[in-house]
Amino acid sequence: MKLRNVVVVLVLVAALAGWWATRHYGTAEGSLPPLHTETVERGDVSQRVVAHGSLQPVERVEVGSQVSGIVEEVMVDFNSRVTRGQPIAQIDPSTFEAALNSAQAELESAEAGLELARHQWERVQELRALQFVPPSDVDEARASLSQAEAQVEVRRHALDAARRELERTTITAPSDGIVISREIDRGQTVAASLNAPILFQLAADLTRMHIHANVSEADIGMVEEGQQVRFQVDSHRDRTFEGEVIQVRNAPLMEDNVVHYETIIAVSNEEGLLRPGMTAEVSIITDEVLDVVRVRNTALRARIPDDIRPPDPEGAGEADAVVYKLQNGELTASTVRTGLSDGTYTEVLEGLEEGDVLAVGLSLMTQQEGNQRSIFGGQQAQY
Image (tube, rainbow, N blue to C red; front, side, top):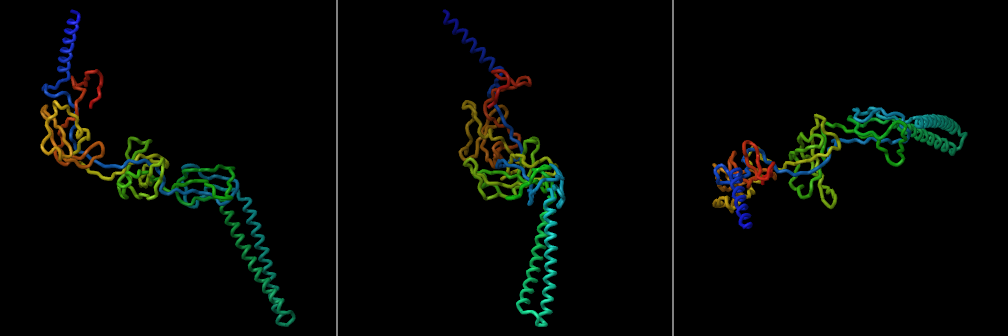
């Protein structure tokens, strides 16, 4: 008796659940369950190669020092604009001034020795004409004069070298640009004994920049010079910037056993929003079609239950895809011929028109009085 009562209760609950589900989630015509759909639209479809890279100035100049000493003054700071030949730092010149004065004195001494040798040469020539001195004295006087002339040249070159060393204590900008890095402070000692230390880094023009992007070996075959590029940076996620591929380098870069090839992309930075070192997410446009009929790829992979799926049309095996149109509450199968795909949308060449509604699969959501309802309550995912 108890078992019969339980069975009756279960049957009643099942009947009520079926009636409630039919009322709330059945279609208006009562023939199709709720379906998730996509609408065919017009738009652009582009095939892209995605890579990452960093923004760098077109021309970066590292300013060093050829002399050693204590930094006496720094005339510029970060972001300072400089012109070619402008002094930007001063190294203590006292040691080099002393060396210059010493070289000047040595030159004057050599010139005095040359003057004496010249007078001796003239005197020996006069005495030789009178046969008062032997020929060996003439040869000795000639050699002394040549040595004195050579000594003057040596001291003159030494003076020029000392003057150049003194001039190098004033660090000047080698080109017009902006200071993007300053590595020294006043009072710091610069040691240039082995290699020239880097004091500043200058960017010639930040209105034009390059992206050094690493493209994987699987995609590099599709990348060519002249292709358009769209990219984003983290500091301006709401903006999409544009550029152009200007160089694809052949030197491979190995990182974690993965081969990449460096691709140089020229970009414009007239607004000054891009800064050196920013990481860019790059999309290189390898192929693109504009204002074409397109459909989401999910509609080309529809999952329709067997009990409501219409039979495939003739030639379905030769078509690129089979889609299911929803018209007047009924599903009809249709073949389509597709073109370019970007992973999200696919170009439709034949078989569909703008505005067609395609079924993708069953939906766990239905519309009731303008609000989405789920048999489980709340907002339920669609598939």
